[in-house]
Length: 299
Image (cartoon, rainbow, N blue to C red; front, side, top):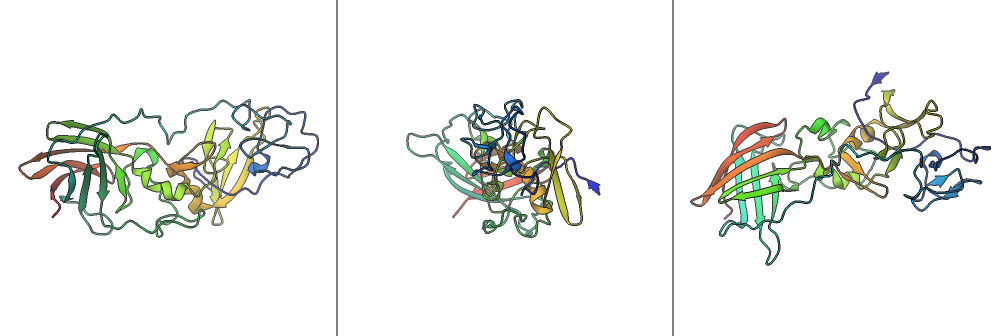
């Protein structure tokens, strides 16, 4: 088997036997086989819809009380973006291109939609590559977009990877006169896929993930995730068999106790100056290669 411990992800549960006898004396609230309520006889359904074998639930609704929470690596906890006003005359749609770069579709398109609602903060949408974006996913176990090969792992290690045609939110926006700088969160586009996933608390890591484990291995077309759900017995490792496409792509998601979204890590810095009815500057392309950008107001 090939070790893919660098990937963090994953999926459906095939694991523990339900209703094991003699477990009510153990401490901690541990999801039964990572399955939702209703629970097996002798287990308690906690507020977060998972099963506790102690008969009591922890303060957050059901995760193991002996496992400390840690930050999700795909959600660094950025502060809220500061409000900003768009300089006069610059609101609207600006279309252009990257110089010396083409996306997989062969498009070099770069678009900004700059808005300034009355008595509200400005906002900027960033569209890279060919439009429209891919049709939304319908299967939580398959990679998305179709053709991603089951190993997109968008944004892994903060690499800059994008979905063409998606309207990314500009973050950390700063206007200095006519000069605009911002960043985007490349995994934001994965929210439509990540929202199909079920969050699981991964005890060995201390945060929620798309599947009940990380650091797995693969073979025979399927992948595995592993976790140690009992803090009193860390050697009791549970392995869960999952589709490899789902296993890998879960690395692009950030989850909490109730849902999953696209990862929030930011990358891809842009620096653009507007002057005399046009704009130019530079921005990051996939692979974090900086390329010149040219823009004009849309007709």
